[in-house]
Amino acid sequence: MYLKKLKIGNVELENNLILAPMAGVTDLPFRRIVEKFNPGLVCAEMVSSKALFYGDEKTKSLLNTDREKRPISMQIFGSDPETMGYSAKYVSELADIVDINMGCPAPKVVKNGDGSKLLLDLEKAEEIIKSVVANSKVPVTLKFRKGWDNEHIVACDIAKIAERSGISAITIHGRTRDEFYTGHADWDIIKKVKETVNIPVIGNGDVIDEESAKAMFEYTGVDGIAIGRGSMGNPWIFKQIQHYLETGEKLPKPSNKEKYEILKEHIELDIKYKGEGVALNEMRKHISWYTKNMPDSSSFRNEINHITTKEELLKKINEYFTNTKNEI
Image 1 (cartoon, rainbow, N blue to C red):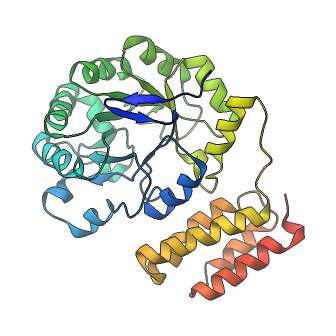
Image 2 (image 1 turned 180 degrees about the horizontal axis):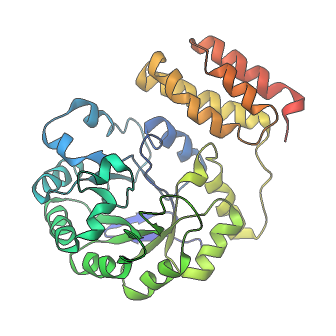
């Protein structure tokens, strides 16, 4: 009933569960891991339109899609219509969908007028949307928040602007910029947005398991769900939600052996694409997410932080996950 194919422009998704874009998280290795659990769409981490415009090689490397399953969405951010148009043209050669970020709350993003700061200037937001749509060769989507703060709730306004400007689907996160990720996402505003426009609406915020996914579909009537923080250290969530929506039954939680195998593969992919030094540093946060709420995970994470070789890291992880005391 809730799990279904979803069409975004001319791109048909096999299902309507989407890996949301997250800076520093949804890189190529993580997306390759998540793909194993059959999301309908994966979104790469956001890239700066200015950096692309000026040919920054590090930024371009974030758009690597080596042997990924399709479709894939790539997200761009910025507040200049010209550079956003240029980036849309560039990214649409690589991706199946181009996504515009008007939701990021990070201070270093909003101080430049980017991300969720655009929710305070809907005229400029509209200019940017039109420029991206005009320059992209693939469908364009828009991700935004409820508003800047409680005095500026503009979700329905920006949704209407998006629809009339040629956006193929929208994703709304049910918090203001002021709230960052605190408190509870406002599903009422998501429901209102769904009732306001005819293009597909994807809900985002506080979907962390099977029940919350079903509840969001039931309460808001959204066409799809974007899962962000609920997938960190938990790529199984997509398969779990699919199974639950199809059968009403829950899959068993992954065993420690399954967790170890996935984490090991994640580490090896990170090393393959980024080199051992960078990967060992970056994987620390992922390891902390994979081991969250497990016994003695705090002391285990402290040990991990001092490891400098792949061999040592895999040995330590194997010891931790094969210790029966750590089964949950």
